[in-house]
Amino acid sequence: MTRSLMNSRLKIEPWLSGTTIDFGGGGTPSYLEILKVTGMFVNMDRIEEARPTVVGDLESYYPVASNAADNVILFNTLEHVYRYQHVVDEMCRVLRPNGKALVYVPFIFPIHTHQTEAFLVDDFFRYSARSLDRIFRDAGFSRISIEPLGGLFIVICEFIGFALRYQILQFLAQALCIGVQRLVERLRPNTSAQRYPLGYFIVAQK
Image (cartoon, rainbow, N blue to C red; front, top):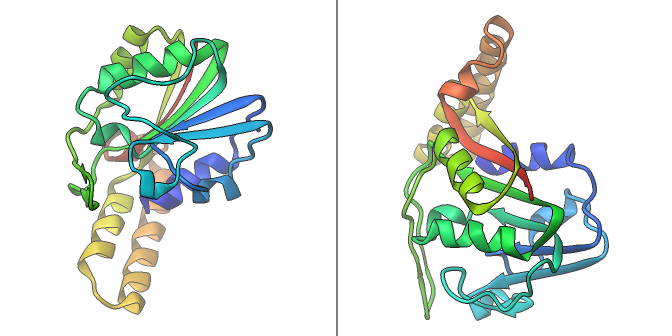
């Protein structure tokens, strides 16, 4: 569900033009089939097997000049970084004036780690909307939009997906949860996602 929500949000995001840098992503990420990116696209990751354009550690030195990018992207990555303020500071540094950052972070979501032969991708943090606002403002971003995605029954739907073994059962349970969530949103618009966010989609401009 968290991936579906992010992808749905990306469908309405305006095209990204100029130079776009994806921090924490490698290879050809699936979201490029949804988010329209024109111009130069570069991604940076510390894991060489992910085949990024640039190999680099997000918690260390960024081999990118200041004011070099028109857009930066950070999806499902900030929770895996211990020095989170450094990452957001660097995102702001490499952006040109009026450049845009697109970020997605999970909130109500299980602990998730990933082990490779060379690295452990750990899981450190969950961020509330208020903490995200302070982190991005402290980095130097001036216009920040933080959008909660989810709702109580969407969260339940996500965890049901992890708990049930058979896809048909997952489908039936998730269809029920989505239907109930839509009913809740009609009765009480814009409240459920704010209280029970599966994650947050951030758009921040320098």
